[in-house]
Length: 181
Image (cartoon, rainbow, N blue to C red; front, side, top):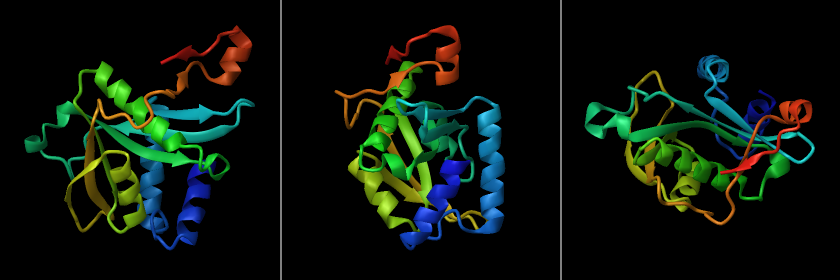
């Protein structure tokens, strides 16, 4: 949640209203807490155990993706947030690549996202990572709706995969070492 608060402030300083609306923000936080409780959210830890980033996956969002999109063919990435202390390290790219590898192991073809419709900088970022804009949806009750997807094989940084392992508190308790993925 601290990453979310930091990101909201940073986004505001960049001139975007993303996540700043109290009503939609409260709904989004409720959904995010559910994804954490359901085990659909991950964090990236630094060497000292500090949380550097987070990402979640979720079910297909039927406000945006239809049966014609073959929703079962994709993994839906949500809430990718990189802390300001880790900015500039290409961590977001590595997380998207990790998500692509996860989707591929599940037999999926795509990683899909929906982002805030007005955040043009975020659209450009994802396009630089190989996402293709599919369409923009604008339901009255939603502020996101810029839809994009990337084939699971289109990795940005294939030579620097994230290491995957148990959370640091469990590594310390059980002596486990992260496994390369």
